[in-house]
Length: 95
Image 1: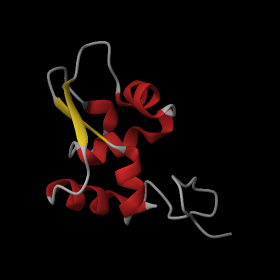
Image 2: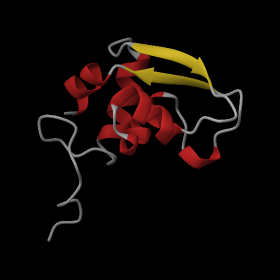
Image 3: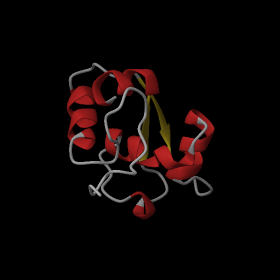
């Protein structure tokens, strides 16, 4: 079995949360190719909760982390500026 054989996909087949997806999100955010909403992290927020609210799936927390240039989603302090990328735009570049 391949290492990422069971990794879920966003849309058209590319694996997410892998070494391919994270730089692709960051590069396209920097280039202005991915639309996003911006917010300031509050005490009661976590990235998985935000992903659940905006995408309907808390497992997509890593998309928000990649777009916000956050290395590890559990270590995000209150007051951090968070970018919530448009998932359709992300899918265009990641899959």
